[in-house]
Image (tube, rainbow over all chains, first blue to last red; front, side):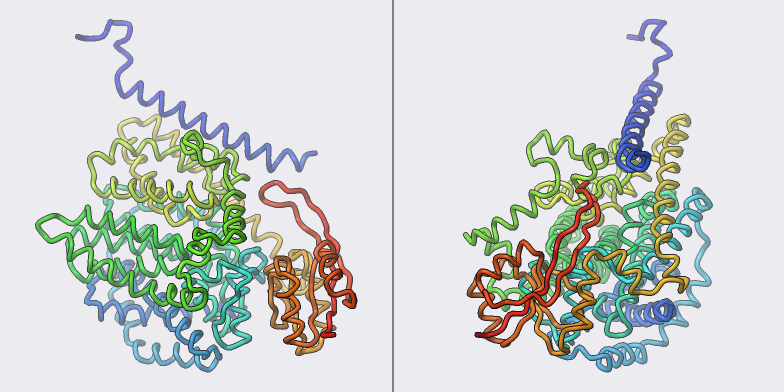
Length: 45
Length: 590
């Protein structure tokens, strides 16, 4: 059974790609946010 | 500076020895990188065991070590031109990521080289990686140092430091460690190029080497890089063996796994995991049991001297582990303290959360943030490839098995180092799998490049405080006074105590004290301390004021020969800066 027309753009790779991009962004934002908190902010205080 | 000139000489000597042993084992490596790296690994392994032999036989004299190195070099010097000839004919390297990772790798290596040229200051280096070898050197033999349980572990890398200290001094030991980091990177490059031809070797090598963790490890005489070097070589030779099934490669894999297992207690776990991977990798029709025996035999031969040494000294080959489990309460309590000091728990939820916590709450793991976000970002993206490729599955098994073992023991980030090269290969697998998703691939390249750049900055930052010393603008004394909290106390003792003074220290380290010392006064009973006083007549006890109070109640006639102050810098786990009153007590036999 083919997906409805309005979901057709959502192919497997697109979904996986978006999920992967979200993963990379979340991990790296959290990591660098924490790095700034423990190393940079104490220097500014 | 002279140590910097000695490093290439020592490297050439171990290269020559190693190639000779390689040929004796009947291994025929590819010309160039493979031959050089395997030879250096074997040569360093041989140097570790020659030093161990000399140490146990009471032959730790410069003449003896120089003679051993010279004799071996004379027997094998002809190997060097042969290696160079074959290397010149080897094919050129892959270009992907070469310029970016290559430049950052060079900057990181130069930065950490400068940092490594400074005298050692890392706590563990002073306490036992160099601390124990220094005491052994003073006594010209390896003897028990019971106040630091870690000296009962297998200590192959410390044997290399011991040899370097006999030949020149602790700066050469630091440089040997730094070079072992670069050799690990080279071995990883080789492993990828040989076994994973679809991957980008520069990318994988960059992910591993250009990281704040490797910077931290390269800058001081810690031992994880050497241990990791042997582990990567064991993995390479094992993959070679399971692909072709030749006996010499199995033997070589076992030799390197044995050298890794002889570098720390936990090394035996990695050797065990590798054995299982070999067992699974050898096709059934080629005889799995004989293959595993060829692999396990050298492991057993190489760890045996270490476990025998500890067994003879303590009655427990894995001291203090078996002794603690069999009911020694004080030991069990101190082990529990070591295990409990790091991490955020060992429940099931903690196990699932640990990959995130490791880098996001890194201070609880003694510097987990140094590992960086590249591994966690990319590793999950390599999972699907594990189903298709047995080698990828073997790497996942190694990383996961060792990771779980690590989780249930001491959760210190740097103890993960030996499996980070395997994890870096998995990152390379992920990078390659992203070929059909250009946007995600670019994003992955971006976050990896960002972390490599930050890590390179940490290498530059590590070099900065050392520059005045290396440039000759700051004396060694001045450098150590500002970097080692209790250095001035030790200098006072070096200047003022009699040359034959017997010193007892409260803690475990007095590396810069030029008198033989006994550590662990803080945990000694009245009788134990009394027996030292009885034995030597007069002893000097270096302690923090709060520990001295107890000693003064035991020995009311003890007089304070010196009072000082020990500055304690802010800890990597977030402890604030503080200072402690210290004293040197003189205690005489009544």
